[in-house]
Length: 361
Image 1 (cartoon, rainbow, N blue to C red):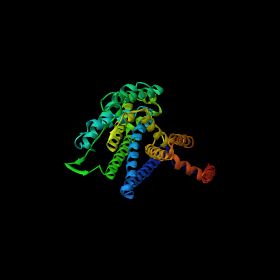
Image 2: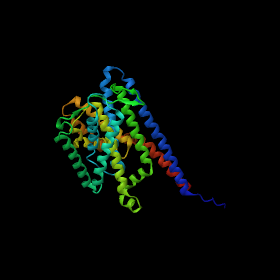
Image 3: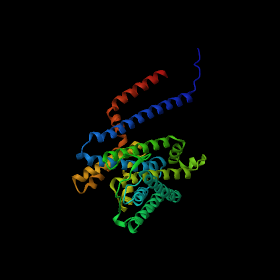
Image 4: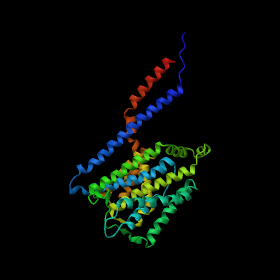
């Protein structure tokens, strides 16, 4: 009997996984492209002064999506549960308000750099200290630092105290001396925020596919093993912490120029809690989950607030139900429905496959 030539099973399995990974990446990229194309077209569909409210609301939703993405990097990919993320959001917002000229529009690019840098520097200083702790101690120390930032803005006259401060002119975004984007127009500002959201998603996706991102995921699963393998886990975590703070600063900057007013409440633990709820609601460990969670949270809060003054009860009930029914978050809803609707067919296919495998044996 002729013998079958040996095959490299490991290489075959590796090639199969690589093919599956590439196919998944293509589908994910296509899904993001479709979603962003729909978002880009929405202002055209909502044209007219009567729909200005909805355009502004969607701009706010996308800003909160950037904020949720910044926290997702820490919670979902690094395993760092921070309850003080609002500190970086608020620091950037206050930096924007304090540096913006009061008599004329400021330079949007310089204000952006200053705001994000301020948030990143604060995240660096806080991260160097809090990353020495673990577990519940890490959560409480991040909360303590955020409360310190809150009371600095609330109890001092740095920027209006408890009354907050205003931005009287929206900044200008010129390119080589030109001024192509007048963000006083809600639609133009909407596209600016959409561009920032696309940049955030693309940047985080590239980071997570890099060696740095793979190391973060490894640290989340087993930090001691990664340290034993020679990885400087503290530096990786600090890098992720600073990056998360910088993207939170980007969200805070956009928030400040949208509303033209900042007050200490944006540094409160409620703001950090809202970001965490967005991540949990959408799905921990998924960029799409953070965006879906932000859209769901902000839009539902807006809708529930029109129904009753006790809208927080409705929101709390929805979040409890969503977490109980979808432990993986709203991002997994399609998968759950597909499994339940196709459960019978899936079992029949599995049975046939098992029978064929038995015959081969």
